[in-house]
Length: 284
Image 1: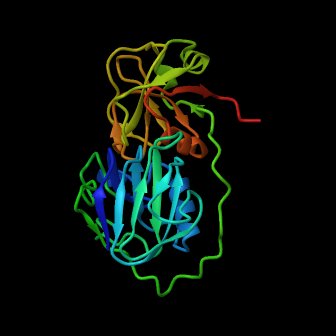
Image 2 (image 1 turned 60 degrees about the vertical axis):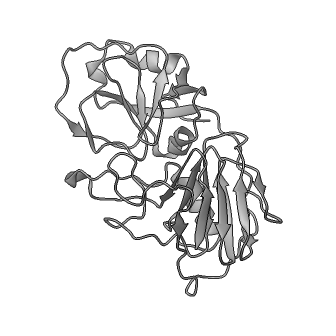
């Protein structure tokens, strides 16, 4: 068991989400920065889709009732109370040990994987907490007990250290559409022309942005249609929202562009107040 002593500002159990159920109205959910969760799991010898803990802006304290191999990835944060602990490396937490995650140097979400995975009861095939629908385990709070899965069938740990994560510039590559025709001529150039600022109202559903207004060419609203992670949806305010893991399966506001899957980890690590740019050009 892992006991949550302090969850920090917001912490949840996450795996790679509930896939293939959007036609039933079930959001995908899963780790906002799936790339970092996969890496953490590989470091401790888990399958990439094993459930771990997503910690938002650090501040968590976890007590381990039994010894366990652990890895922390994503937003790099100082780790205390465990010898030789560090981000991007597997390390041993002894029985009775306590791990403390400090405030990240940059980024927003850190991922803790434990060998064996966090073995809470799955809901609709996933152990992820969905902040929008309420599916899955509740967000972590002081006193939450998290069971750890069996490690008997797992392969040995072969990785000593992952390359340290570099801070990636807040640039999101997008593909235009599918509803860019709902906007005034040149709206996509406006989206990509100047930086936006990440709003305090951002969460796992979406990154809300403040910046140049995207003016519509049509009045009224669309009938609800399917949405994907990375969709840049524009409500009547003209201020875009980049959908993250807990976005709704459908939406009625037009989508001017969609962020490339490869850049979703960048979007997931944006903090309130961070600048972000959009581009239709591939990175060099």
